[in-house]
Length: 373
Image 1: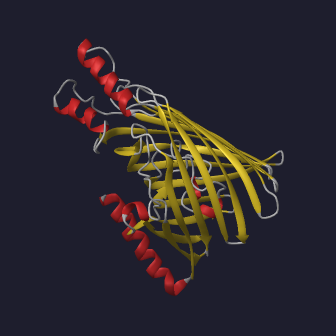
Image 2: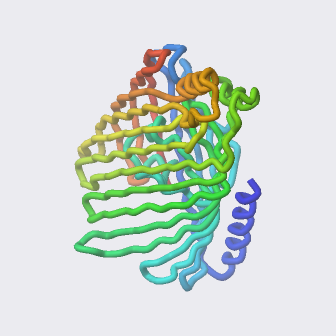
Image 3: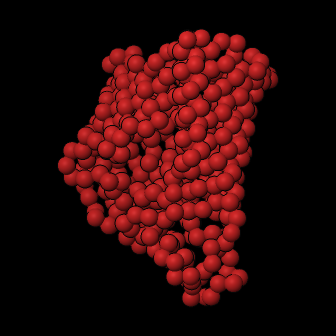
């Protein structure tokens, strides 16, 4: 929290300083969404949806300030207000940057973690086709505080961007709609993007060190905390985790095709591993884009070593870990209507099937208006 406040202070001070010396621009985005459950099984994940029309859960508003101080120096900050947080206003991302050369630049501050195809614009609804990004896949940390360096290359008609990341992590991981807080003294890694105007391929890999987890909530994630409190096992020190992903996107004026695969594991820990994939196919017809999307998540059990843990404790750990983990498949179908160059209306129906001990399915409905300005 202190690191985030420091980043916000630095960015705000820089923006104030450049207000007189450079150019400042404002832009923003908003989502106004209505969601409901059309068919409900109480034992199945519901992502906090309910039988009534909910106009708050997926609604949000964002305002971005960009400051150009000249000679390659710039800064940006973004204020967010989300319905799921009762529209509490917070400064989500704030950073300064410097363009070293035409192909090299660095940034520092509170930054987005580039893990997915849509990491750079997670909350900008007009930037992606579905009513909402796949909830079971986009469930890993999205923000870190630190530095980042970019390098652009051109090779055989391919545009290549390599990015390195170093910083601290304080964010959330989502299991069955519940959040577990992850804190890491250090996160490091990078990603590569290769694109030629039609196809974009990207991959990312990140490690965290001295990592801790805060289990809280009203479902099975409190059980793992109880295990630690009861000292059934000693929490291993200097915890390490890794996240890696691979994605691609077809950038055609008619055909919409994209996919992401992500995995998360904790070395010798209690937290379930995550393995999730989604794919989307759509076809643009004038201002309308019908589409279908499939997402699959199969979490794995705890990775704590058997050595030093009694057989009974190990069985309890694995049972609780698998209960916390998510095993779901979701099919979605919808249509997006781009009725304005800066606005779109999307209607979507999703069927989620749960495949663990509490098998069953829920059907969700969404209607979202997305605007950018």
